[in-house]
Length: 196
Image 1 (cartoon, helix red, strand yellow):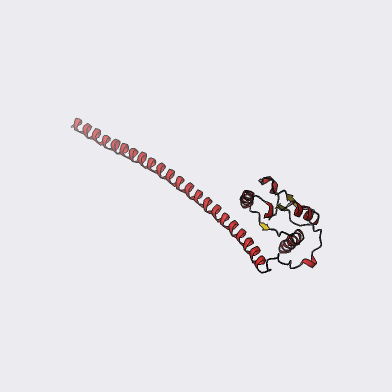
Image 2 (image 1 turned 45 degrees about the vertical axis):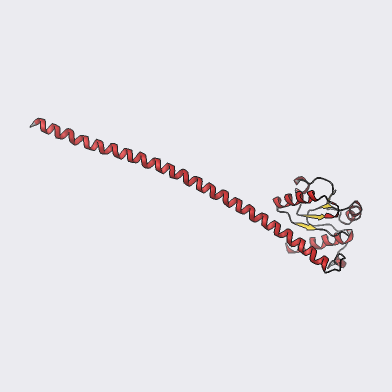
């Protein structure tokens, strides 16, 4: 009888040992699956974040394109409705030249004679020679960039647009007449300052 009890005791202790081993194996399996799922979740969240950044960048680029299109349409509309001549400036009589801008303005382009005529009218504006290769340092602190495209290589136009889009700087298009351009710029500057 003593031996039988011993056998029962041994077989009784073996069963919990097997159950413990099985549970440890299940826990290990669950932990591995949990780690795998956490890794998949991390990758999915990273992909989602990257996608959101890409969409945001695309939306910003679309907005910049939209603003450029608005400026160009406005310029074309004014030119078409002015019988081929540059349109009149609304508040031309209120604008005193030389005009000191409130904004930090950079102008790209323009023929040498145009630059010579306009510079004294806008003393604090930064003028960039039309054949100076554009780079971000030229417009680093600009609030607005104006372009006079009559004397500017087309490749420079594209580079300037790329820089201003990256920096979210508004772009305006200048008239060919130095006097009208100075008044156009002054009128725009006055509107921006009063809107703020």
